[in-house]
Amino acid sequence: MGVSTAKVLVISTFLIIGMVLAGVLMQPKTSMDAWNVKEGDFPANASPEERLTFLLRYAILAPSSYNTQPWNFNISGTEIDIFADKSGWLQVADPDYRELYLSLGCCLENLRVSADHFGYNCSVAYFPGPKDLVARVVLQPGASPTLDPRLFSAIPSRLTNRNLYEGRAIKDADLITLQSFGLDKDIRTSLVTDSTTKKKFLDLIVRADQIQYSDANFKSELGHWLSQGSMGPTGVQAKIDQMNVVFLDNGPEQIRMDSELINSTPYLGFISSNGNDSKSQVLAGETLERLWLAATALGVSLHPMSQALEVQETKNELDKLLPIEAGSTQHVQQTFRLGYAGPVKEHTPRRPLEDVLIKE
Ligand SMILES: Cc1cc2nc3c(=O)[nH]c(=O)nc-3n(C[C@H](O)[C@H](O)[C@H](O)COP(=O)(O)O)c2cc1C
Image 1 (cartoon, helix red, strand yellow):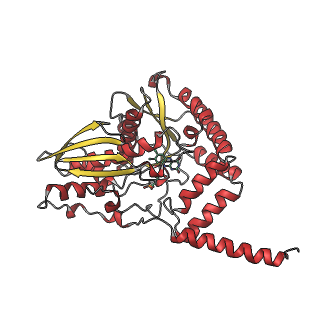
Image 2: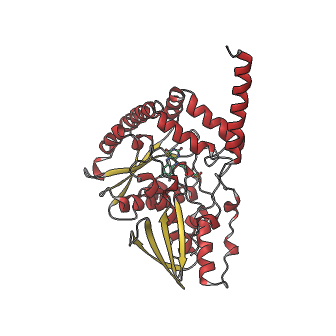
Image 3: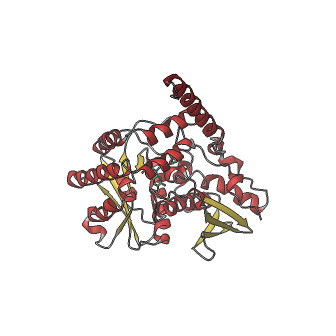
């Protein structure tokens, strides 16, 4: 017995509404509250642990790929341990954990900058022991701040700006400041403006987009994170965005948008490292975030573009785009757009601090 078209339509409509509602109800606990942190709320007279907990309110404002926020913390005495939380690992986009460790580096950098601001001397041991322990940070109070205070002020205003960028140049002195960031002798920052490199970069992004948007696993992973509401729209809109990415062919539109973005950009940034291990990636993340905070303080916008690093075929080609002075053995760890742009309306949400604190 045949089923009428009307019945199929009714059943499909109920199924879609059911999926959307289930997805909306299951969205994780994130909110914008984290951005309401105020310097004057530092609990100067509270216990050492409470003071270190306050510093973490700045650490969790760090950027992370797909806003996965892959961190957990444990506070003990004068130490903060930063652990990798691999529960949200991007298996398709980040098979080698490069973006996960870069994101952890960004978080560590926010912790360093806020610790310095509140008078802590900070020493960091990288991967000092147990699996997933990325950094052990020892914080001694009573020190004088050493960093430019504008870096700290930039933490709550930094965000990803995906708008078209204006063609105008960044002031020479500001460019020198921004290029100077390589927080370790093995890490380099290169800002390039030449049209040949930009064209080659654009070709790699187009190729990476073609490969990613014809890969059902990639679309499913991206759709999942969009549906979590962690990268912008929440609620029903987040579910619609997920269905759009999973079921429609968005490749050509993505290529059109990415081409426009790159063509509008006066500067392309490359952060590269001598080594290519997890520690190099954490250090590259620290450098990215330091540069991002400095750029924010100068009114300059930044937009990481990772597509070409997420696809093996294009990743191999990226290292060849580095300026010669960066050295032939350098590995590109992150690429980004940099320039002046119109404002972004909203921050993205964060997991509440209590959810990322490990309770013993
Ligand atoms: C290592 C890393 C890679 C990223 N790659 C991209 C990217 O390819 N495209 C993009 O639009 N944003 C990218 N981002 C930005 C994140 O999506 C963004 O940080 C996150 O959604 C939180 O938003 P916020 O930076 O505005 O606080 C990346 C961020 C990091 C730290």
